[in-house]
Image (cartoon, rainbow, N blue to C red; front, side):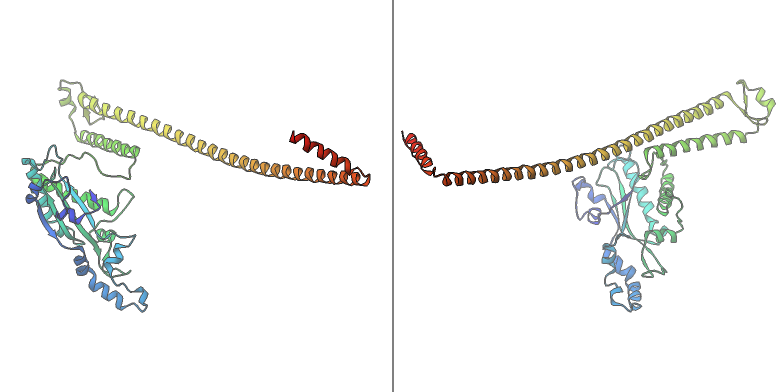
Length: 368
């Protein structure tokens, strides 16, 4: 596994809740250096050579450790975690767990020699957790670089220098190196009569369907190898006739027993059925994606329609409010004009005393 790396946890300067402190004494430390010291040892001379060539002060690097720490392209260090078995078959407190620790110990002895471009600065074998496992922290570097420091941090270039050249997306330098190290560990396991049962990988980039296709491809490969072995058997026709089980001819020179033929046919049928299921599932997924895309389009269209109608409603309300307010003002002005006209007529005809009399009568009536 590839871990984020926690140096203090690995060295047990920090103790998590999942460890058994009584068994920490059985841990083994292969290497425990400070990462800043590793950076000084690896890059100080290269940094001095780089800075001496710079005519512009803004291109100088004052602290290479800080430059990489804040970089978005490279990491300060990498950590790999190796474990054999699990808590059910290789528990740390069991005899098998002790055997796993021995294997991991022997594997670690040659790690730095196999990986000269990965400077190990922290490596610890943990026996105080459920299953023995090994943490290896290292700084990958390349030398003779034409860009930047001539010795600089680079995982890709470090792996290339060790002979791992990337190919397809699923066959990167890293995946090749991981496979190689697993094989190295398997060789040590084999010396202790531990068989590597390959249950799966940690290929996160594979989807479920892609993973199943890979598995089917592996099954086909097994079938083809079985068929190839059978085809290599040059069976004498007369000798085959003497066999009790009736042979089924594969070719003019190769004979296949009914049992082998049945096994091969069953495996082939199983593969074909699985392929059909996967194709059907893929069609359903494609149809579902198309439906979802269509619904998203309709939702977007409805959203635009609602926004347009809302805008129109706001405009209508605004215009109506303006019209209503304008009409009230107009009516009020007209009433004022009429009232003024009536007063003028009354004064012209000398009828003001009548208005005064009616006003006195209203006051008297209100008083009663």
